[in-house]
Length: 65
Image (tube, rainbow, N blue to C red):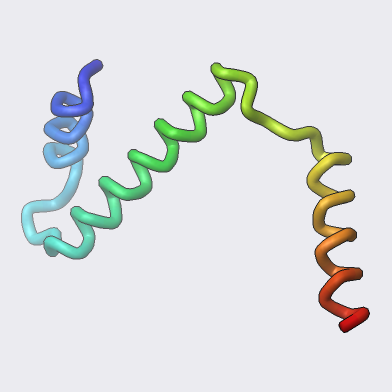
């Protein structure tokens, strides 16, 4: 499905009284999901353990200043 078709499908699912802000948010969410799927497909992911280590490192850096 093309990006254009995905947008058309999303607009068709939204209620008639949807605001431009709500449409914008829906499109931002769709774009983020597509980027995430592309990252997974390209192997640009981290394990849970890697993320936990990063968070622990950042937390330690913030509390030792």
